Length: 434
Ligand SMILES: *Cc1c(COP(=O)(O)O)cnc(C)c1O
Image (cartoon, rainbow, N blue to C red; front, side, top):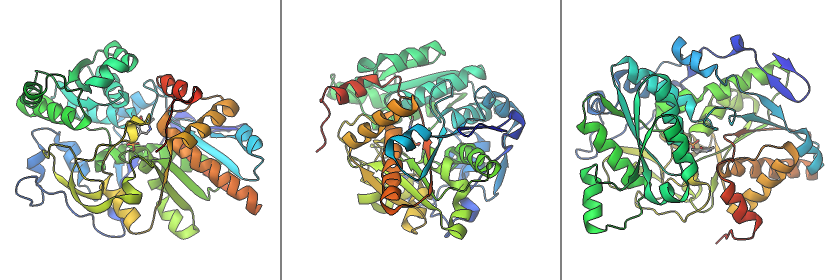
């Protein structure tokens, strides 16, 4: 470990060797996912046409610690351990007595936390003889993480990309193709789901719900092909806990204790990955844990806690979660990764039980926060991450009013270098908050 007062850098051998599974530590048992047709709890065999056995096992596991395979650690070492950084220049700009730390996940090749699970998922599929993975992507963050990960294990990757983003945001598509992924604008004529939509509406510009239906159908209909999801499911959140396990070690090594932990929430994977390893201490030591979502898609703060489908069409199992309804169409905000109608079932349960707080913030104040961060700390954050920064800054300003020397920590889930058009809209006054 090294610490120069600003950056906490772990040595490669200090990287955690196990992921943390929260299922055995939940305050209540997790309500089971239900079959979309029979409404009975799903059986592991129901998932086998699209997921490998090991991931199905992890999805339902009650083991607290799950060993990270050596081959996955080997890939993680390309960019992990990631730094924990004290945002001193931001603290000075805010004139706050609080200390602000951030865990930076933007150092991965695709530029976000997403490869933490993409690499693990590609590995387990490869081990079970799967040759191709399908998935959907909106703005392209998840598609690029999976294209990167499959390439490293000599697998193929097919990404159904929402058509409007495919045409408007070419850089993520180029990144996916650079890593060898095949990118198909959705709806497409490759699948029955896509063809049915195009017959009725040849100019349909697509949605994440339609792209999920196409990717799942492609996987179900082809031998040696599986489907992969980038958030929400238990095994995805599990793989992301490497973030919080590293951060916990980093805080311990510099003898510091966070008082409040903050993360942005789309489906909940980077938030859970950062915060879950601290949850037991949080209850003992009064650490607050705050989930931040966009006011335009306020799932945790204004949604209902009930069973709902994961996709628009209703093909996926029903999950017990906070939801705005599976047909909810969020307005087109720039934080594309946070525009999901539901949230991870474990996160939903912890919010319902009052273990985790949730707040919603408007778009323009998140860009204000992101700009101040860029102009003090240098890194241009992803629009999603700006939500966490907004609340970290608000906490630091509150600490200033109250003269409190608290320690604030947030997860910087990714960089925003492919999202500069969003910053352009903000800088030239084209952003609107309703
Ligand atoms: C995808 C994404 C998110 C939102 O997804 P979660 O599963 O909620 O973490 C947040 N930040 C970045 C940078 C992303 O790419």
